[in-house]
Amino acid sequence: MRKLKKSFSELIKENKSKILNDKTLLEKIERRIDEK
Image (tube, rainbow, N blue to C red):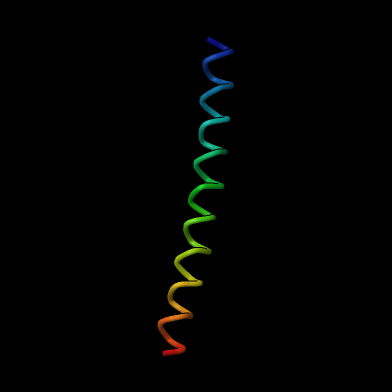
């Protein structure tokens, strides 16, 4: 059970960093659109 919990929190961490990456990507795309 403890092991499962640990892996679950690790999954959440990975997802958070993934979401952060997506956000920065989106911002970059938005800036490009604004430049045009």
